[in-house]
Image (cartoon, rainbow, N blue to C red):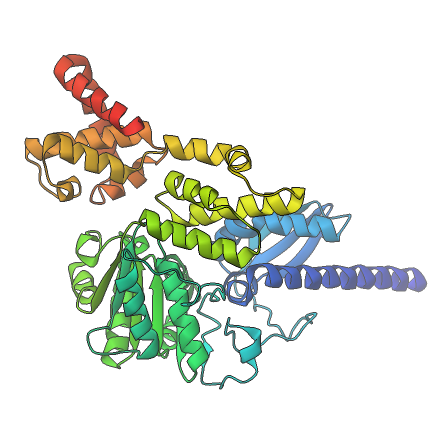
Length: 477
């Protein structure tokens, strides 16, 4: 009897050790995939639980963390467990209060973890002073591809580039704190922010924290849940340079705005540099508190305009030259004419062409370009943006473009605004909340009312219906 019990205990111990080893491998893979910062913020607190038939239970200390991990990493966790174990088919995430989160010292890893994450080229990492750091528990890694040297400068972005250079060379210069970069999607705001961070780290003796406004909010909420807000505040306010990307995400997030405002004041008062980016200028971010908008506008505000044909050609020539694959000039001109709104899509199209040429072993031609990119080009030809709609409607009714997002309710302004919302709903794939945000952060119910009202007027008034149909044809062609 005693021998049987000993054997059962040995089997249980062996299975437990096997399970622990599997979990260590999965943790290491996750750490590699998501990065040190993401791993420490969201995944390090996971504790291995029991196996119930073909299901593994993983514990987290709060409902907030459980829900976040489930929505962002649930499928990946399940896939990794299935790959590592023939037994485990499902992963169940549960909350267990009062548990002690594991540390890297509790479970072995395949490689030692660095004390500080710097996210710059390897050749400089061994010689950089320890004072130069990116706060590893706060910052998102900087992309080494996004440097000043790789940024193509043209008339639409030369002022923003010059401002970014000044901040990188002399942080907290009078008149440049904060530096506020704004412009449309894919025009280079994030590139410049990464370039500033990388340059500061390369120069040394400066601590930098870069993150999106969304990450700022989630980490602030996480600090509240874990009762570590003071630690969060102290870490954030100890950096020399704080960079927040996509600040418009904080619109409507009053508590997070409050925390950012106090952090902003603390850093500026201490002579530290702040760099912020958004899709609109501070004065147009109507969903932010007035005191925050005022502080953001008191430094240097730099607009990145839409690209010109010449700038798009320069960007394509630089990217094609770096690839080593010959791309004819007429192909570059064709792409620059066809894809005009987003530099990311422009570069994506070129990368796709180069990859196709490399894989199939055929040169890039205008004919192969039209064939390889036919889905992208077709979608781009049909694409209408809300900005296009607002501009065309404002011109048609002879009102100011700013009236589209203003609070004015005069009929001469309100009716065109409703028509623009109606067209945005019918000609774009944007959701109602997204459309509302483009019209002065209005609620989605306002957009629904506008669509309903314009639909009624089209049925009742033939002249009005003709005007709306004319606008629709002008936008689609």
